[in-house]
Image (tube, rainbow over all chains, first blue to last red; front, side, top):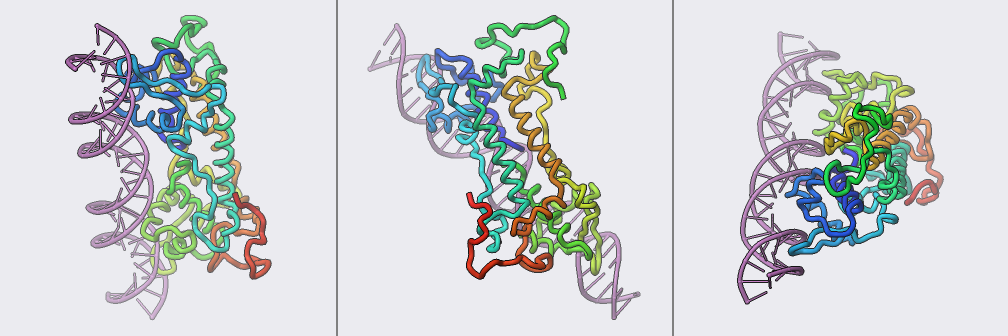
Length: 163
Length: 163
DNA sequence: TGAAAAAAAGACAAGTATATCCACTTGACC
DNA sequence: GGTCAAGTGGATATACTTGTCTTTTTTTCA
């Protein structure tokens, strides 16, 4: 894959939390909102808690809430909590002659990783919430959907993405 | 990960074959040149054979040889033989409201995949061989190393990449 | 034709990612 | 303080990726 399933789940959860500020979200609520299995989600969230991205509160009225300003919380940070991106630093073949650099193949691969990393670093959670193209980040139902603003009952008017 | 181990191995093997045209390379030779386990390599190469990227010849003096012009053989093709890149086409949460497009989160993720795909499509094997920065693509030893052109017996003079 | 070299094919083993479940702890509220 | 809601941690299951090994098939060459 490209980013792990777990990282994708973590991103969903953080986006959901950013969309539902105020009261803490229980595992149930998060699981429903992000369509992640309720029994797996806690495992995904724990590293985010340890990293200080979110806080968890036990007991009645507990749940998870975001502990960072979405405005300077990047996608990269979330991904790195859960499934760190590894750059290629040394020759994977361990050739002594390549000790000081990477050959064209691995340089190209590392550059690609770097580009991805850069993009993830530049994308903030708040940015994602702002760039609303008619489709609110994950979620349909419940809490966060204030107005989805359907243009007409017919479909396919939005012309955003398709392929 | 980012590209699978298997895909990385496939790229190494193809680069090696492009560097060693002429007589077919046995699994042993390829394994040594690419530092891939000799018992795993055949598994990696088989999909490439089926896809017509390389041909294999059994028996004495057999081995693998590239069956495509490195000039228009892209990294993307190799990767796709072995571990295809999947774009995000539909909402992974299967929200009906997102049927016609992707939300900002998944749009961003898909755009990142697309950028990667584009880069891989634009990079040819021949291109990698040309862009020789002092380090020949994988390989040290043996066959393909005609002149690695060591500047001095001392190390670390090359100043190409390091971080 | 026979022997040896080589890839192909398939069974199997190990490791890692994903997912589930349950017993335990923490905390809020009565 | 008791009770119940909620997260935590650990054990276990399942699936997929990576890796090994053995047998079979193909091919060349003597």
